[in-house]
Length: 426
Image (tube, rainbow, N blue to C red; front, side, top):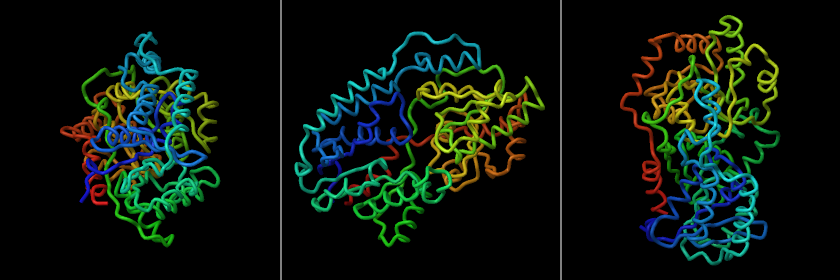
């Protein structure tokens, strides 16, 4: 058996290159970054691969690692919470702490564009895919470009290269009503690309793995072996560290504002609470940018005067800023209709924050020991649970918090330990 430490490995960094222009990472970005750093740091021959319109380009270890670290530096994820102006502004709004002060910042938009332009020049000067040594392992950890099957035709010519693809979710296929028009067909094309080329599939949960196998079989494609590794929680999330001090019970929702996250249920609950409780209404903080097909949610956020004093939106929050927010909040609310994983649940648990989540399979998989679960359609049940958690000296919150004692969130070392045996076996 050839191990990862002795075989040539090429990690696809195409998505990371495109994210040079963004100030903060998404969940998939963090997976891409973790894999790129892990694989490029290992002994043996290591390469970065970037898909371009003129074919894939291969970069040596140093070139690829330089691009990866430029992306990470642009996100400024390693700075302290107090140095994050987004966090400081939020803390001032909900807890009375001082506003923004100068501190380390991610590169501005113009600087990121210049970095990206330099990276693109290096990529276009890279070698063709024929430069990969025989018997290489190719690892693709995002869904990017998989709906463009011609971008992966080079794998037909390099039959000696073994390919592993990471599948994050099948939501556009299983729940097309929550996606953009046409996204179900595009995602089915992504899965066909995986089914044609993958010698192995990596998945973030058993739920994703089972759905992937079932879909490939239904499409007439034989599923390759699948390894499941729960996503690693960043070290910033923990019980020790700065914590926001809100001036009233404060609940968090984390994730892009879109219909499948079920923000609408919570906003209607908050409207009812605001009409009943007035200034005593708990606060709801929505962490995440506005997404797609979210007109009804946005209408409430922009036009409903009743919730305006009690609902706060924040985007661009750093990892350390989010961790500080979690350490001081009342509970995380995760009422999603469907998820591929649900990383905020384990980030919250690592930070000592009680979690109330929708009763869906993947939430049961990752949070059965500490979450309270409710049907995502049970509006009255969510209302009662929030009210109980917001009470002064809440016994419901104390009981949920007690379940977190001794909890240890999965880290990236555990993730790679779970998936490496399959990769080694190829």
